[in-house]
Figure 1 (tube, one colour):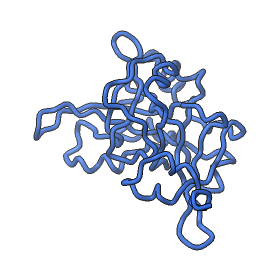
Figure 2: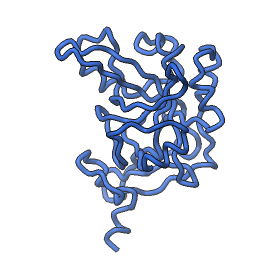
Figure 3: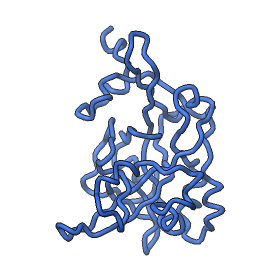
Length: 226
């Protein structure tokens, strides 16, 4: 499961890291939630391109747009089986730009305490994703959306959750986007990221509310109060 994540790098940093122009409207985010717009990189007619799309897949055949909130994640093990995902696996793969994700563990005084999982060097990375588009039947507008692929957890995430988002190594990002890549090969890339290259850092409980979206979310409450 991946229900909240961060994409706090500036547009210039992402442009340099992923070699694409980041669209106007992108802003640094510390508490990205389902239904909100996220930055992706996908294969366009002239090579990789970035876009801002809704997080939560909205298939063209869906009669109720609320289904998107149930499709924020896609299990790697069943991508080739589920109707919402199998038709996208061939040519609608994308990178979802991020620099961390949140999971929660039981708190000492009750409630749940968030952890922020990120790369050891704190740099941006990409989740493996799928994207699609449809015309809104009410407005006639084009709606583009995406889902984040999840897999079994590595040893760092496993004590907190039984799933983790697929974080693609930089060396495999172009491969994931390659439209000529077979489905079987694409599925083979969806494995847990190396735990030794990641860190888990206590974050603020303020992340529990999507109204909060600032850099202080990445600091545990007790440290802020000190």
